[in-house]
Image 1 (cartoon, one colour):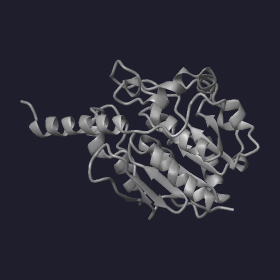
Image 2 (cartoon, one colour):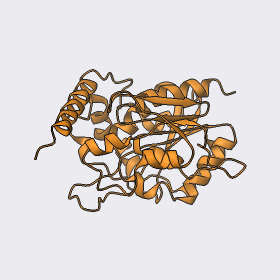
Image 3 (cartoon, one colour):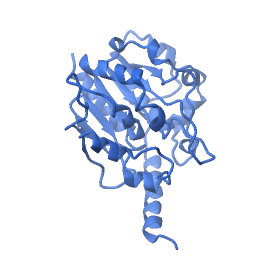
Image 4 (spheres, one colour):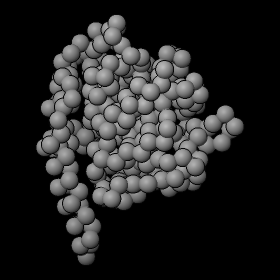
Length: 273
């Protein structure tokens, strides 16, 4: 029997995605030299961007990995604001790209330009290992999403240590969509969950069901955030941009949120001397 409520919700989801894609305005060109950006004398500092190495679902034939625009939308805003970015992943090396995220309905002109850029692709294929990164070099850390992060972000001791150190030195911890799984293991200086009693968001249980991945994920992000004592909230409508700022912890709910996450990260960093 067809579940009419599910069909209705799915149709609304797709309509929202189309509208978001059609009216998205690229912030900056992807054809600028990434090498030049990284050595620019005008740099305001560096942001560590974290991506997944995990590509396989338990029972689906298509592959997961980085959700492309959750990198590119953040990247464009932060780059235009004058911040350099280094790419890191749990194992280093190649970052797989989520197949679904590359469909026309989810991509925009700027994202396609990035994927066509040889230098940008080289950076995605040669990400740093956590052991090659020093927390002291960064003003913020940003955990990108894509379902793959659910397997290799939460229990990675090196990434957890980097994020904790960046936060402890006065930096910003930010994440979007499933990437918020990267903050689950973080602890404060008293050994308590960093997000306990803090306002956060992340991919919701409803969105997981609507995306058809309910039986694929190892856990529900919304439930796990709440289990850490976080004050979780989500947008009124699924798959629309929603961002929560709690001082130096900045989280976005879904693939429609990375641009707004970046804007909030830039605002917060501009207040840090």
